[in-house]
Length: 281
Image (cartoon, rainbow, N blue to C red; front, side, top):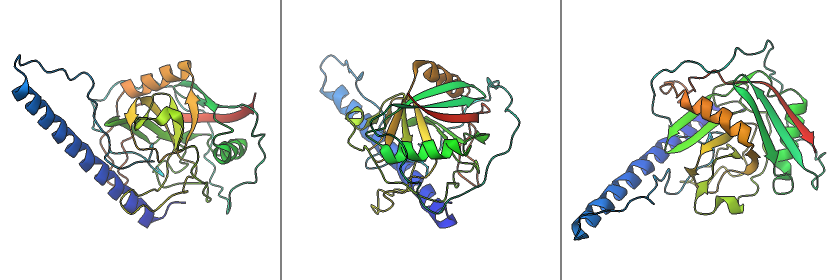
């Protein structure tokens, strides 16, 4: 369970992220102005420039990237809800005092399936690279922990993620235990980018104080568009092509304005995980 103080630190971290975004954009514009002056032809090639989501940061929510990786999304116009009504059932509130014992076969392949109101999202899990994370998801999914939970955050500015995994739906919930950071040197993260299709853990890491390592819980984020983030969030899975189509549908519906109490920018789409399962291939 995330404390009120931890939530305050998280919101402060997100404020820092937004400040870094603004500074990076200012530097980008300055470079463009300088290039314009220096160019005899007045032609500026800027195709390779990308908006940096941070200067030294992030993990998440969220991720949502939380346990929350993510900055607040800019509100977008309300679009029709592209998703179905949630299945009947109640969210579980059970918590545990310590990380579950390792029960997975670290040499085997595992897949997580999220049957959501918006469609099915299949995720290939990185078992050998992130065994504690995969083992935890195998445990929680087996307990029905994610069933009927709502994905509480969508960011559509700077970084592009859908964040899920909190039974409270506020960004403050968790399973009661934490797991270690893993796989932070994954080759896919080179260049400070979490590529589209990455599934990663949210956490409480604070880049300013360097505190909050190894604080992953149950919240995770799914990257629907390449996002510039430092390698602070455990990448533990990859979304299938069909799953990416579902994420795009969710993202296209936009996000709501930030909630004044939680700071969350909820997706306009009603994204509920009806059932989560982890299976061994």
